[in-house]
Image 1 (cartoon, helix red, strand yellow):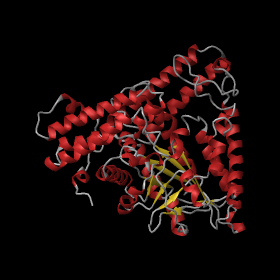
Image 2: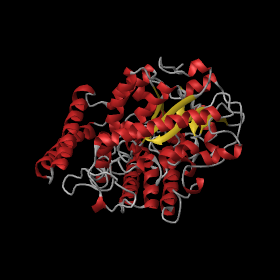
Image 3: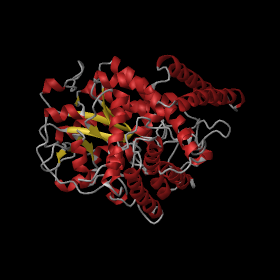
Length: 513
């Protein structure tokens, strides 16, 4: 089991049983040859440089400190496919070289010695990262993460193949395709059988229960609002009635110290300002400065000051972990806090500094014992049952963030695509390349990113265009599967949408139970 007590922790001296784990959910939609900037491939390259590479660096330091069981990482299957795609990994080389060149130009041309120093430091950081990417990780981040998963340092979560919002899919066979493809992708990438899943958008519906059980899933994560009517503490997992399936929810009282938009730690004036960027390089050389400061009023960033604030906030949060777990009525409280991985390093530049310092502070202060979700469930099986209702993390805790007046047409078309896919599966060879590509395009069209961004805005018409592209390529593949000549759209699909090469589309052919 992966419950560990570091030699510095004092939890065992007091006899307390308090457990702690941080969940990082990493996801990006498929962006290969689907635009570059401001929407498209550069999303992925930024996440690689800001989040995924630094996270692996942090894992190496945590291992050196003997910290195990502190982190659970969910990497969506579609992101796993991008991380292993030769085209995208080669383009990331080019991205790093271009970033270093832009920062070098800033170091020469920027006005003022402090900004030039910041530019030089940023350039050196990118060059060092490029060296690690090539020589340490050998351009294989999945392989590097696999070592931590197999050693038990990190627990891995699986997910639906393309992060589809499962409660709104029309046919259970379509849900089966998403789940089975996702689990097989995770298993192939890491060589383990995943027992935990991050349901896309924390979207749960009772119709998912039987499929999750049949696929060997033993736990998932739910929105805290959906579990609240149970009356149970958020520091203990619950179990679905008459089921082996358990579910965790984050503690809202602890999360607010990080996630509150105005008063959370990331709003500290010392931290890097996300919205102000250099006009030529896009680099961020400024700090937040103040809540009401205009972009023109932002002061230059002070890295040392930011590191000090991250350490201060980590120590403060470790005390919150101790306080809240000590006060819990549960016999073995388990604080499992879930975040989007991209929040750390991209949106909150100092987020990984804070996270790493937090784990050291929890260890050194004896606030809690690090424990993976599966190890906790083995040691402390849930005793309370609660029938979780249909729910999500979205507005109102329901489906409206993904289904609304702006996206209803997408769902209508998706449902017709599911029906047609099942019809084609009955007539065509479900193992043929044309039908496999149709299933691939169906899943890519189902990505929750398109309906989310269409609802929230901020990405122009990109989400609608991406949905339409996958719909049109799906139609071309279905036509070819039915015997029509292959079209240019199908050729483009084979080239661009090359994920899940070992796809088994047979779930679409099965007779529903």
